[in-house]
Amino acid sequence: MARQGYVIVDYSDDFSDTVDDDSDAEDARRRCHLTLAPRRDGSGVGASSSHRLLFFDLPSSLNTPAACLQPRSEREVRQGSIPKKDPESSMDIDDAPAQPRNKLPDHLELQRTRVVCKADAPTHTEGFQYSGAFAAMGVDNSVSVEKFCTDFKIKINRLTEDDMEFDMIGVDASIANAFRRILIAEVPTMAIEKVLMVDNTSVIADEVLSHRLGLIPLDADPRLFDYISNDTPSERNTIVYKLHVSCAKGSQRLTVKSGQLEWLPEGSQLTIASPAQPGEKPKTYTSFGQSQKKMSERPLGVKYEDITIARLGPGQAIELEAHAVKGVGKVHAKWSPVATAWYRMLPEVVLLKEFTDGDAEQLVKKCPVNVFDIEELGNGKKRAVVAKPRACTLCRECIKVAADKVKVTKAKVDDKDKADGKVDEGKAEVDDVEVEPQIELRRVRDHFIFTIESTGALPPEVLFKEAVKILEEKCERVISELS
Ligand code: SF4
Image 1 (cartoon, protein in one colour):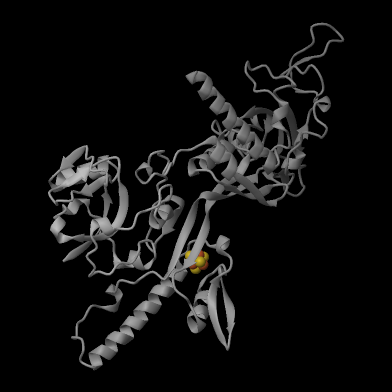
Image 2 (image 1 turned 90 degrees about the vertical axis):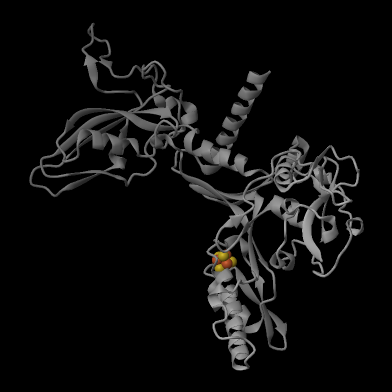
């Protein structure tokens, strides 16, 4: 009796190690990355770095320990990831077809390049970054600059003043995630950090009002400014805004908006001390050497003028000065230049069988984002095709449709068999029927659909360029530390 198995066959006869029992075999399998093979005389399992991966039926005479076998289900065979075998076949090891070198078998190539999303959870989610991961099959999995230069692509799909969507192709998830994290936490912006409160008779407490002011996006290019290092505010590191509003007694309630913040290009107007000599400028909370109007072509105001800061009742007033400085999101979220930066892997929807006529219509109706479409085949025949796979949100509704159809068919067959007396009453419930997948939902592992939404300080494409520069600086720092 033959058993279907999945083993590494070593044709070199150069076994560097031999294991004879199940636990040793399992241990060796883990350590050697599946570099196991049954010995030809069936006396044990050899481990070697020179081998080939094959699928075949193991003759029981080989007496191979069960631990080195990876049984394949009929389902995987039907999905095409494993060559279909005749269960009764008893092919000998030496008859197994050779896998061409420098090419992975289809099912391993699928695992290397795709995440497969099953009904309950995704599989093969881990990356294969280890350079020798497929050395056993003669495939070089190392990362090279030449390969990166050939494969890496950026394709912009949408670009507006505030957001952009682009495809980033040919990088690992770790690189895409590095850009996401740098965008959120390390690209600097300007934000209000210090509030000098002169008067606040509104119902909002000083600290709450200051916090609200800190979160207002400023229309100021952070590249024009330095970080404030020694707490000496100058025109190079501080932007000053003034807010002076009041609600007259007997009038309607007043809403204070962000547009009422007034930019002071000459610096603070609040004096610390009177001038020592007549004719001297009074000392203020900032020491600007020149007007900031010379630094920027446009006024350094707020990005959005309709953000509500406070509501004032009759007789209430707010008078304050707000000082904005340069900072990064990892210190406080108010300095984060993006409302959000996120990515998703490119969806791939594969129909494992043909959906025709009524089934096709049902499938098209079920998808909430119209991934599927109907193709007319003539003579009133039609079939479902995957028209817009990028839109897939992985809701898995289509998998449920396919599964329900199989269950209904199964239930009809069971009912008929019961009526014909071919099966006993109490046969397995329909819900317990293992449903063969008819649609496979995949994600392309090195293709990311990246979205950046700017808060307004810098356009999204400039933010991404800044993120690239920051990652480059980090790499240079690491290289210089190592050299
Ligand atoms: S998973 Fe949802 S969105 Fe994706 S193809 Fe299926 S039904 Fe459509």
